Length: 202
Image 1: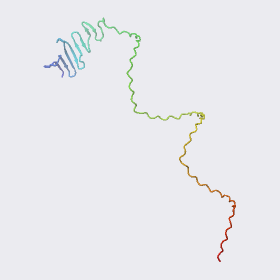
Image 2: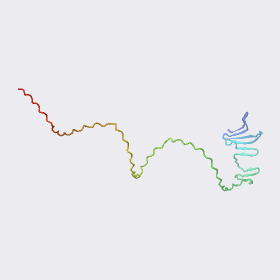
Image 3: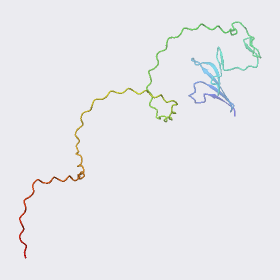
């Protein structure tokens, strides 16, 4: 149900500025009475749920976040804007149309050399993975020519006499029996005649 609430409420000592809320159950508009430094109202402001300072009416000026007018806009007795939104007020002191684009300025002087960059960063850690072994390349198409034969090297010095072998060879096998020798010559002396044997028994 729509309500109009005036603050501060009775016995409310927390409110610093008096204000009125117009509540339609859908939207709210708040009328604030702003107290000046001398304790006298200096202005009135309107706020809503979407704008904390929508309109402010002061003793010398009006501040607003937007104005919708269905009629002409007057300042005093002089019309400034008609109902079509066209300016019909005085032209004295108004800003003219925007001028043409100025020519491009001359190239500025080259700036000084920038300061040296930061120190060299530390070397990154060794990567965790080593790539797989690549496949063996194909056999080259051409074999180099046979090199020329080198010249005969000089004859080396004769080496020292080798040490006596420690092991004596095994005994050789017995040779075959030689052939029968020729008969010896007749002895020079004939032996003496033997004695006559004894008489046989009768």
